[in-house]
Image (cartoon, one colour):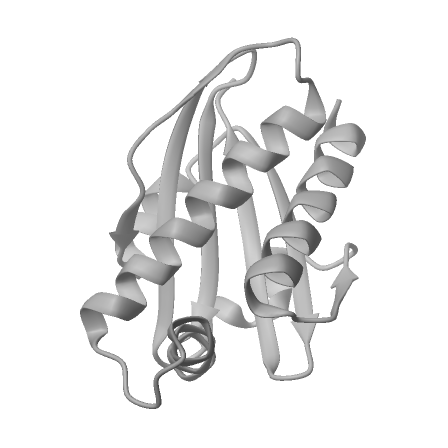
Length: 153
């Protein structure tokens, strides 16, 4: 199950970021969230999205602020973007990656996605308290990002 879910996550991330932001990506699947260094990156932005269904848990998309700012500016076709626009972009990426992941993983099963929200490092720490974790480090020309999924037991 974990291997298939990881493949679905990777395909989804490639599709969403490739389509929305024209970003060529590489994946470091052997990394853990701790070893990636993303949680220690100053200005790390995170959006979480809960899900229920055949699997239940939380998906979190992590991206450094500078990279998110560049992605949002490119997406909106503007040079200057607001914090609100960046937050909207980040939440929409989390939503699209989650939805695409589950339809790729098993299109016959029903999943209910929650509303994406911005989270703090302390909230991220509380999400990581038990259960299975899946993490993908996503490398782009412009920097590193990550997608973490915690599955309820």
